[in-house]
Length: 460
Image (cartoon, rainbow, N blue to C red; front, side):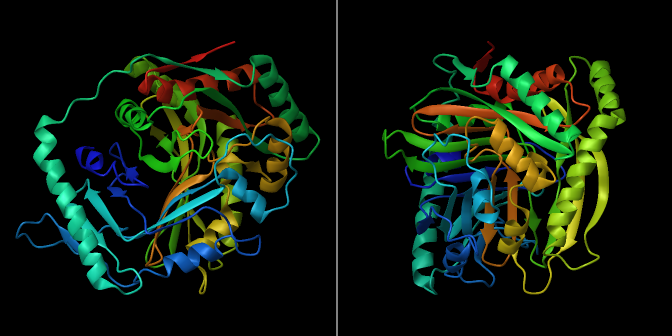
């Protein structure tokens, strides 16, 4: 975080951080000062057409890299990302990919897509303890890249020199109180509406959410610093979105997501790890284990997870080699500080001529935050949720010039939109869902990120 502080004066700061150990928590990435920013999708035929053009400006071969080895042999494995696109896709980008009704109110002035082109990045390897700096030449200009990396090195040195005098994280000036835009009674009605849609054969499951909010026009960075330490997550992330055109206040995404979306390696291998099924953490070790056993034995939660796995298998099957889509790990238990989940792994291999953008077009938004069947579930969501989701339930992602991609589902995510701070919470609704239990689950899910930043939900 001391290094990140050194880059706060630059526009477009992006910190994608594995804030706790875990199976996928190896790399943390930082970049800033993008050379270009894309804030619109091209069209429904190929919403990523302009993004492809931007990414092609960076050299696709091996990046220019250096690390802190200090004479040691450099390990053969370099960071997965040292230049490319970084940003987010909002949930409503799905409207570019499918025909959906327009009923919910859009009240956040944020683009449905924001991808920034970065020619350098700093990477931290949690496994080896090494730090890497590298980049890719823009439009073949190697001299320009060397100048850029020199400027980054100077900032890193400045951060190291001032680290000993850096101030510790101060407590919040006052507790933020977030209010739900959905009352308890409205929630119960909407859960029953989903159950009715299931009973009538429209859907099998839908992910229903509600939004908490409070007025906020301050600097969101201190909140992220609290979030990353108070609710550490495998896919923590901060994206500076610049000043609001309406209020001139800073805007940003502050994420403590536990859930990956899609990953692609240099060989076209794809993986995704949907989360469905949740219980709170116990106050004692025995209570924690009891809740875990209850979750693992729950037919409702198992069915919810497996239905979403089927959605993702279908999505991946649209762009992967036939026969390569598999489920190597089904219904395993994973924990965060506040909750424990059921997680499944789905893998595949991209077909010849397909890339990460094709995978996004085939799979976005994620099945775990929509429902089954996906498109019909999204129609039900649009009918029941009063406001558009915006960045929430979209994805925070990086795409490398070498074809690799990493992404997370934007849950447990605060959105500072220049006038408010919002946090969505929700869950998958099935026929077996009990409205009160589903409400209680959203309260539990909100508790972790809210407590981390010194905030509370005011329950009506």
